[in-house]
Each structure stands twice: as structure tokens, then as C-alpha cells.
Length: 232
Length: 366
Image 1 (cartoon, helix red, strand yellow):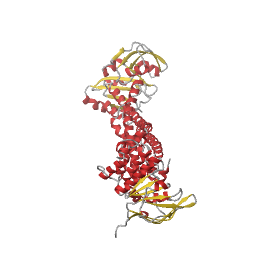
Image 2 (spheres, helix red, strand yellow; image 1 turned 180 degrees about the horizontal axis):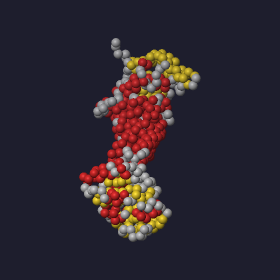
Image 3 (cartoon, chains in turn purple, cyan; image 1 turned 60 degrees about the vertical axis):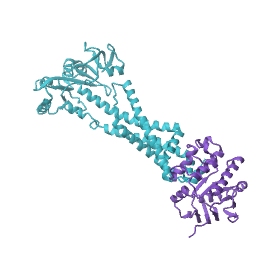
Image 4 (tube, helix red, strand yellow; image 1 turned 90 degrees about the vertical axis):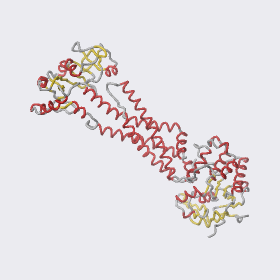
């Protein structure tokens, strides 16, 4: 069977949460294709279901129904251990709040992701180039509290890509940054996408941030309401 | 890398880390001190029993190796024993217990001196009058007594006439007839010590005594047999006491580490979520916390061993006569294991909670 050009394929994805005695339909039949090497922005207001989509794609939550294929793996069929493996090897996360481990230096925050994925030995050349791109070389020995928000987010990006994941998932990566740092981070994501071909799915409520992506899909009430075809 | 994370986590909260280690160390010190006291006091008892210089000890009916009966023996038995073959010296004593573990021993100074080699006086000299009291150096230091000072014991005032090197039977000595009068036990003895002409004849003497029908109820021991009976396993309740102390140690370690790790897990909820997001398995998270606990228990135990030297110094300085603590290197590993077991038990629930934490909820935790 030929390899699918799509690194992410989502079909009729539904997610129902039980909150007290009420069922909340967070996703109501989402369909989405993301080709390998694309920088996709998912835009929508709070409660539109974009974070739920993010969690399912990242293997942090299980879908209720539908199919999700990530780099050829059927996410729905994965056990907890399988989803852990997915997060370890296939997906890299960048969060709004950076989420670096406060006790470790920037370098060790990156290294622990390698260590968890059982990658040993010196960093690969492509990653060293990426670090140059992220302009982190002089800040690697600092702990997160000594880094600015922009620097912390750049460390988080480095950590997310160090294991060369098939997909980089970014959840409001500029949500805590000022305009200048936001632009820098978005430019970096774009450069990573162009220079090393990193597939990126970025969730944002900010249309200006979405402009840095190759393509933008809009979500509302658990559905994708506007989605130009891939490649447009 | 996981070890680095463990160390950095412990360094991140130095006060909590130090207090956890201190609590574990106190648990270890407690066990080492109480076990050391048990062994130390028994060894001191053995040392002083040997210090008498006797080869055979006769105790009244109803006595055991470790306790004396309230029914003393007639003094005239001494003459009988002195006439036995191979017996070169005989001396009897009366023991009057004070507040545990102290007691006053009545001796015939001349006979006792001949058998034991005599007291070495550090200050003062032998009995001069019936009120005279000889004490050993530890009792003198503990009670801050000097020769010539008055002491009230057994409802009577005594004068310290001599301070002697410790190691011979007891810490406080008075003249035998004085103590016999005081107890209303004139002509009676608590124990009688016999010295043999040759070590090879000790068993012959013992057999002779045991075969004597009139002495059938009496306890007859060689000194070596008696001191071998003065052990933790022979002292009623001591083994159970040590077991209780170990149990308490485990409970203390469990509670301290449980609280410490529980708060650590709560505080690190978000970090645990991050670790899970970047692919850490529940086992990995569990591993981090168990390693942190093992480090706490290890260094806490080392600190505890160090503190057991401090407790011995305090005991030796403050109450050298009442208590003797032995340093027990053979118990260091046991204590380390005890603290590790308590600490690991205390970590199990917090670590399990962390390992099972939902990554999404954890990442949303502020």
C-alpha cells in the first residue's frame, strides 16, 4: 500500500465528555487531512473543540468515536501505553505556558525529552542547526526562571522537536507572549517548517498568528466550519 | 538524566528535603540508640561481672542468670565453699537495688580486693567508718561527687570515701555488715563468688556444688556461663522491645515520607503532566519518586548514624553511670533497610497517584 501523503487523517471524530450528569459534545464529527510537511493553523473561539482535537491528536485523550491516523498509526486503537509511545516518538508539544520543568536547565529540559525517548549520544547535526535557528546556544545552561517568556518558548520548541517528531503540535504558542516575541516564535515555527520540513499543527484563537501557517481551518461548536483543501 | 532530575528536584526544595532527611535520621538514631543502649548496658554488665575475678558464682534459690531472688543465702556457706577442693578464694556480696539501673553493693573490702585485684583509687581511699561509700568514676561524674561529700541513699547519709576506676561488679559499694544491718538481713548474702586454683578445675567445682543435695535449689554458674547468658535474646522482653522500636521507626519513616511526597506530588502536578506529555510512562514517573525517596532514606540514614554518635556522646557526658550506649556498625545497614522500607511504603501512594495522574488535568493545574 502506498504511503499516504497525509500525516494526519481524521474521519468523523467525536468526543463526548461526561460532566456531572451532562454529556458535553466537544467534537461532533471532525474530518481533517494534514499533508506531510504542512504548517496548519486551527483557529476557533474558546469552547470550539480545538483543544480537545489537540489532546486527541497528541495522544493525551482517547476519542469517543471516529478514526484518527497519525503518521500511519490508528490512534483510536492505541492503549494507554501505545499513546505514551505516540507522545514519545511521533508527537512534539508546545504549550501556551511553555511548561518547562523548573528544576532543570534549558539544556536538561531538552535532554530529558531525548532520555525519555531512549535517545542517547550526541545531538544530531540537524538539531544543532535548529538550536542556532532558535538562538538558544548561550542560554542553555539557565533554568527557566532566568529566561524570558520568549526564550522559554524557544526552549519548549527545541524540546518538542529534539526527537524529530512526525508532528509538532502547538497549543496557543504565543498566548503568553508580547507582540515582538510572538512574531519571533511564529517566524521560528515557520522556518522550522520550511527548513527541516517539520509538520506543524498550531491551535490559536488569533487570526494574525494563523497567517504564519500554510493553511487555516476554522472550528466552531466542535466542528470544522471552514477548511480550504490541503495545498491551498 | 533521570538521576539528574531526581537530584535537582530534591535541591529545588532544600528545606523540605532537609527536614525529610532529618526525620528519617531521627528514626535511624532512635533505633541505633535504643539498640545500642540495650547492647551497651548488657556489655557493661558483663564487663563488671568479669571484673570481680571470680570463676564460679552461686546465687540463692529462685534466682536466674539475670535476676536475684529476695531470699538471700546464709553467710556461713562461704566457709563451706572455702573448704572445697580447688577453691582458693570466696567472697559474698549483698545487693540493694535503687532506682533502676542503680544499686548499692555491700562487700567485704579485703576479700573482694583479693579476688578482684583490688580497687584502683582515683581519689580518696578505702572505708574508714560505717557511713563510708565507695563510688566508681562514672557515678562520681554523673552525680558530680567528690570525696568527702555526703550522699543520701536508702534513707541514710553516706560519705564518699573513695572514687575508683569502674569495671568491678558495681558502681556503689558500702561495707557488707552495714548493708546487711540496714536490710535486716544479718548474716545473709545475695551472691557468693568463688575463685578456682586453676581454670581447668572450674567445672569440677561446679559439678561438686551441683551434686550437693543441700545446694540443689541454688544457682551455680561459671562466670563465663553467666556472662554468656547476659544477652539480648535471654533478657525477657528486650527482643520484643527492639522489635517495637523498629516497628515505630518504620511507621515514623512511613508518615514523614508520605506527607513529604504527597505534598511534592501535589506541588509538581503540572510537571508530572509535562513529563507525561513528552512521553514519560507511569513507570517513569513512579521511578522518579521512588528514586527521590531512596536518596532521602540513604542520606537520612547516614545522618542518623552520625547522630547516633552524638547521642552516645550526650549519654556518656550526662549519664555515664546509668546508661551505656554501644555504637553498632552491624546495625547500620539494618537501619538503612528499615528507613528505606518505611520511606518506600510512604511513597507508594503518592507515587501511584502521580503515575495515574491524567496528563490533561495535570497540565491544566495551576
